[in-house]
Image (cartoon, rainbow, N blue to C red; front, side, top):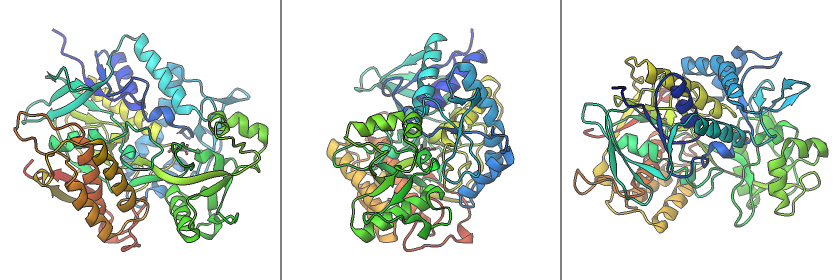
Length: 514
Ligand code: SIN
């Protein structure tokens, strides 16, 4: 009898791509997703996907930019794979039908912060994620890949043998155990755990919590990337204003109308996003204003409207014409650099459990991801996972340079409510945000422990309570941020404002006794 195919959890670029490639490699994958198939963080990606395809570009340059952005912590082997394999994975997307934008018959390449060359492919102007998601989703349906919506991964059991996954419907009904299948986590990041985020609200990081609970090592969680420019308007969603607008020449001004970034970094608007986010945060604190202003009025109107149709439509619904007026913007949580520790083939420390995309941490981004390397990461490491599923080899992620255990018993075993989630989001934003410090982080860890993260079910056979894995992920982020007593990349400590040689390493967290 044919062995059952892999169970893939998540329907963003990584999950859909692994499913499609696993199918091409002769497997029968099942894909489950907690929401609708088309709802994922990928869908909202605007800027695009990086690959060294320009005549003036090279893999070496893309690699160098990736390493430079990563604050001394990039795993060079991972970054080499990412940048070397990028053109082949883009060719796969073209083969699947993704309609990348072109100019004179050649793929159009945009510029984004911290890239030394124009190398960002885009589709539908600023609708790159939507175009990719829709193309892969339709292809998966066409290929007859079994896809189950509103299905939640409740637990992974690892008693030394093959991993056992427990699933249920999103209302908690229909609990079932899945045995004898490799499990691929492609559940995305945890940006939605923050009060302000560019991500959709479903990005609550359960994949990290569920893997940790099963004994997997998680790493680099202190590195949460904040996007400098999301739409600021009372009551409005923090809609992304892609970096590509700055790549086209837009500048940032403070409340007094002054351009301020040259004061913070020579690269000004094209400095790495952690630098830009901190500079905005500082200007906002200095002036007491709740936002700064993205000024795109210097960009040719036709070009602006053709290149950013999604943003133009969004702003029009608030009565803003960016060719004539400035856009109010503020930073928001955007990308989870850390996650489930994996090797370059997606093996986690739990046998039979793979991870790829934003939920995984290969070390490819170091302490700070280069813009538009995240969709790419989903493809490159998704491909490597698909090949492992078809032809498994032994593997194990490298042991992090420093490890810390976390006791599950310290959490409270109570269900998360709307109210506790809203406190959690507030705590992360206020205390584990763009600029952190020891007292704030200690307070965050203490308060997150009392929020009812339901860490140890009352009985071993009980499933974790709803919301427990998301709450656990929040606590792990705060714990990691407290442990790293230096500033590096996306992790900025006001009480330790310099990078330290002793911290030029990855921090791994695992459960005590697990
Ligand atoms: C953006 O379009 O500015 C976001 C790109 C990214 O996060 O890689």
